[in-house]
Image (tube, rainbow over all chains, first blue to last red; front, side, top):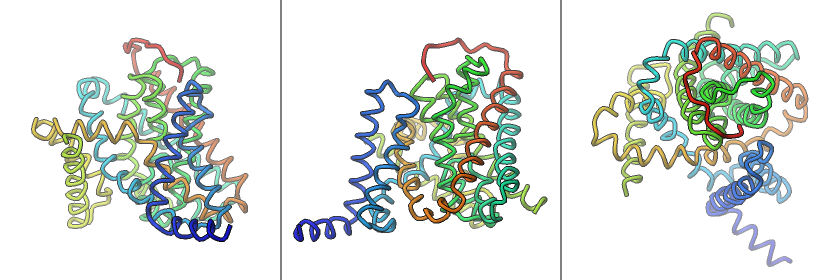
Length: 238
Length: 121
């Protein structure tokens, strides 16, 4: 037993642990997700986070220790944001044709998501730094962190809120769209990408190619709009 | 190899974006500026071909990239236990509001010209 503990302490302190845990857990979670017919509740991000988080808490392993390895996955978020230009470019003729409608929907939808979060949080008496971390939660996590930092929020919290928002949208989108009788894949994908950013887009992409493409467009638009407008809104109102 | 070249190019563009943001004190994050630069650069086939491979690799596995940040919730367990129910309520409700508003507006604005495919989302 003592040997095992020593081995664990050694393994857990090396960057190898965080990277291996992240990839292996995600691959297993994705396999189960596929086996279950990609049911929304089997979301691989959700279960990877729950499993790894539980292991860290139970074994008393610190987050920085885990992140020493996981950062090699994390840094790829930057180039992934740059890569969002690709789905935009692929659909450039549709963008030109439907650009005005898409921009209005992205603008109003993004404002509804951010505004309702701040208003509800204020009504529920959440502290100001939490409110400022809630505002950019519909933007993909790395950008949300940057925005939160600029408006006086807590970047790490903003990232967690963004991931939660992504998971809520991925889990419930299907039911909301059925309830509203929305069966146009472009609309479904765009709404998921606008509000639930990368995680919603990943879900949309798994479900339908049109939905995925429109989610990618929405994600890119939201990144641009929110980076410009959320800090401006806070300068005006706060 | 093509995907690797694409990844290198995406990283270069992000770096260029960060440099621009710092140099001109712009309010857009570096990766976002990198995305805008790439959007302009995709006209050129020597950028387009490798970037396509790199972008498809990253975007196909996009949800993996959120796992390390998501696990970060364990550093805020005190906050979650203090405001947990209220926080979850705010996040769930505002997410639903955002999705409903976006979907209804877009449905109102778009003529339904995209063919309906099959799927379950």
